[in-house]
Image 1: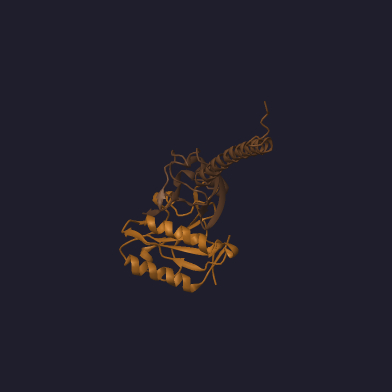
Image 2 (image 1 turned 30 degrees about the vertical axis):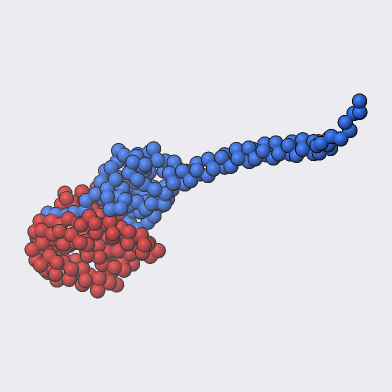
Amino acid sequence: MIYRLTQGMLDTTFEHFRHCGRGRDECQALWVSPWENSEAITRVVHPMHVGTFGGFVLDDAWLNAFWLELGDTNCGIRVQVHTHPHEAFHSETDDAFPIIHRPGFLSLVIPNFALGPVGFDDAYLTEIQTDGSWRQVPIESRLVMT
Amino acid sequence: MLENVCRYPSEAVVERLREAERGLETAREKEREVQKEIVEAEAMVAKVIEEIENPRIFTVEVLYDGVKKPFEVRIEETVKHLLDKAIRAFGPLPTPHTLSLYKDGKELPDTQTIKEVGIKPCDVLLLRPSKVKGGV
């Protein structure tokens, strides 16, 4: 699956990271699209979470409410995006606790708390495989800017 | 000696009384039958109400990533049984041990039954990861 994303959504994602993370805490965003047209990302969601320099945890009550909202709006989560303090990669924690566990689900990691240029420079994209493992995939093979 | 020909009440009246008494007995028999039918009908109504309020088999919905699917459950089956069915239906989900069912914001214990955790017909249960986190 190749997802289409607007520059505005990428800008919004970086704004969340910079405003919430303030260059010192990790932060997460979720890219969502409707099931009837899942290729087109239509929304950037900034989850309620607790962020620290070395990680983040989503708020449990928020997750319940968001799950119901996805059902009400017939939308699904296509990509989880989060920041790292320095290098972008997928840690053991990132591997073990994604929001979606389906093969093909994508996780994008943005380096340097997203304080660099808006875009995918030095970013890391990985995908869940059928056996549950993660495998790095070229960003351009899964995400297209429109 | 003259025979007394004057009888009161007359035979005809006595016969009408007997007929009336037989009619009364027939009506009372019918009343007993109807009363029995009323008791049986009341018991049936109570039984159906009990089945409506506490059904043994019913349908719930499970929601995962914005998609709802219906599942038939029995009150005596465990939450784990329903969880496994849901994971198969939404699958492949290769790391099933990370997922749980939630109702009213609370994670449902796997070992308890549908009845014990208070799942009712048409409830919407969330299939979601117990924890979502990241970190270097």
